[in-house]
Image 1 (cartoon, rainbow, N blue to C red):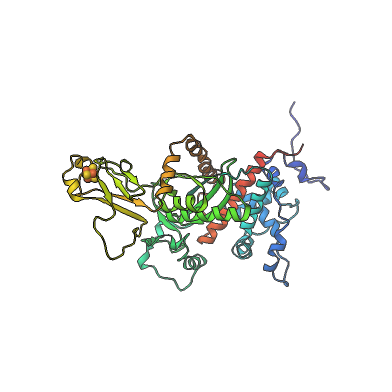
Image 2: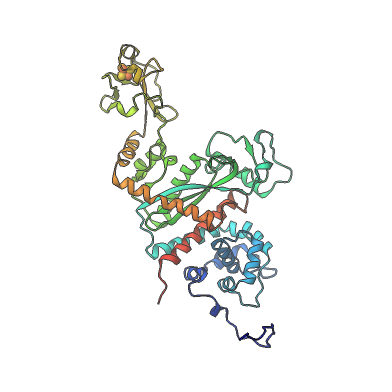
Length: 453
Ligand code: SF4
């Protein structure tokens, strides 16, 4: 039997509770158990004026931002529309049916102003991490570190030659931040090599073709991850440069130790973190096992004997080559003192010219040079330790566990849709990365901590 025609009729009174209409297993309901914003009003209080009209509730704005970042809503304008229409979003933001949603322009003012000045997003990220620790999700002994490129809000078609660019009369916020971070090891000071091109809309972003695709302007998001449950224990924004990313790893390891008393036993990472300096710092300064492939520029591609075929004698400070001849730093007394190690931190050992000239192994040892030389890093002990670890089963296990960091980046880009930034400048990248990492940890808590019966 056909039912009666449905015609919308406005009732005089409604009995309606949003609470009843949000499913028990909705993502935001599961996340809500772990969102504690009780401290933000006191944190932000000094950044509000004592006079004037009352502001929009900062807790409401943070809750809306959490909705946006957890549900992949990247536009603030769209976020306001979605919160207006979606009951679950309203419930999470503590808005009743008749409550007004703030205008999208409010976000811009607060995000670039008091939220940034008070370092609110860092504080929120750390609060959620503290909750992960309390819930037992963080093992604290096995860490992984990696970085991923995120496109900046800067078009490749507007790029200019760096040598031709000058500070415009009207300095934007992004340009101001670029000028302030010129000497910052995470951005402009990461490498002495100056960029050839830059974007006038976001000069701190670097033009990179590292993905093997068309080059684009980008920042790097750096994650330090506890490998037990892939909880992000620290996050840092840098330029997409290897030296900056290795520097960020050091900053994050130290900060995690200072703030949360977490001392990792091992660090798993890829070759980008396998430089002699980084391995030396990990082993000699921090006592952390490097489960990292050694970054070795001395590897031969011409089929000649590798450096590992040369035996090092500590007491004599010399190598012995496969032909049984010694390689030394100097073959005659140098009266003027020279630095033991070069600027790159390596010491060179040379075979004697007459030994190589008479050697039957020369075509396989020094095919294109009159004599063979071996470079030894001042952190060779740490490098050798990393090579030895690479032969163990524990290394295979940590290399496998390291994939969890890459999965977090895949989740960040595909599910949270953070493959391109919306905010410009180093601070914009920092804010977005902190919010995204916080939301990823919240989702982890919601997934792994069972709800009370
Ligand atoms: S070429 Fe020189 S360094 Fe190489 S094995 Fe012969 S003597 Fe030794």
